[in-house]
Image (tube, rainbow, N blue to C red):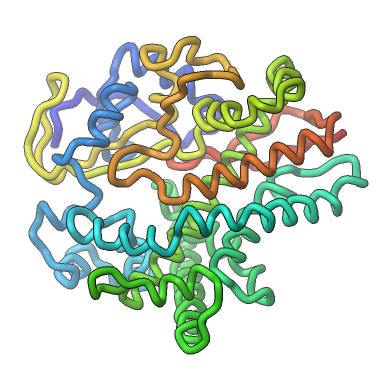
Amino acid sequence: MSTAKPVEFHPYETAFAADPYPVYAELRERSPVFYSSETGMTLFTRYDDIRGLLLDSRLGRSLEQVIGLDLDERRQLERWDRLPNYNRYVRANLLEKEGADHARLRRLVLAAFSAKRIRELRDRVQLLVDELLRDLEANGRMNFVEDLAVPLPVHVIAELLGWPTGQRHLLRPWSAQIVRLYEQDHSADDEARAEAATTGFATALAELAERRRAEPRDDLISALVSVCDEGERLTADELISTCMLLLNAGHEATVNAAGNGLLALLRHPEQLARLRNDPSLLGTAIEEMLRYDAPLQLFHRFVLEDFEHEGVAFERADTVGFLYGSANRDSWAFERADEFDVGRQPNRHLAFGAGTHFCLGAPLARLELEILFTTLLKRLPGIRLEGGQPEYRTGLVFRSLKELRVCW
């Protein structure tokens, strides 16, 4: 266990969810590296520490390198039989791989999930946003999260994968039930729902992959089925776990970035007016939304070999957590770090991570956010908050709004 000083830290309380940033500021000042008994991790709060360690080969996403077990032995040790399909597909995906295995998988997935494929989605994303807004516009109000931010990335991922239209309504519930287990305050009922969702998703994906193998189409599943590099292909399990990762991580990040970003704009009317008057700022505005209230707040890694950092000693198999939300508000890394500035440059935020595990879906998320906010500001010039202050869900991994009620 690391020698980091234990500190009282309660990330699953409602007050923390409402505004974690004053807590982060105090931690950066007084306890930049500390042990949290509630999370079971040594947590880092400062930008320079986090960015440096994300690039450090002494840390990794998998303990297999430390304990020297193969996958079957790991399954026995970690009791994967409790949630067999969740562990098989969610805990063994690309994000959890390291070294040569990670490089191989990432190379194969990038060959299918190409920049060209993302660019070709632009017109379809625009059409989806227009269709969703057309049905909402006449109402004069909406819950932005459920009515627009949630369905958009689900439809986009469905289009990307080539998911059958009649089964698309299943994707959002499956994703929500699976990612609930990313938070440590989940229940036994949450585990049962996540296992059922993983099983349903995996079964449907396997059937769809078989159909695409026989009759390929211009979609990502067909591309993943056929992709080959130096004679290597994705295994059936790797294909399924990759598609799950794209849905769960990509969907959750885009929903939260859209909701948090719009709320930031509406709470800073001078910045909203500035963006309306100069639409060329949209690119920097999106990066600022991602920095200011990051959709992903925590990313963990394991210590692969003993080392010391900033006077704290770490042992093999320790778990460390990087608080992206804190790093993105660090005044040593960003001038006026607590201010929302749609023209901020440079903006080297960590919303998508850094290093070998930099988010594969970042280009797609940026495309969706660009089209969504361009259309929203054009079609709903009078958009404003309605009702009381929006509430955030409790949790430390994702920062997400329960709802965001707006009118125009």
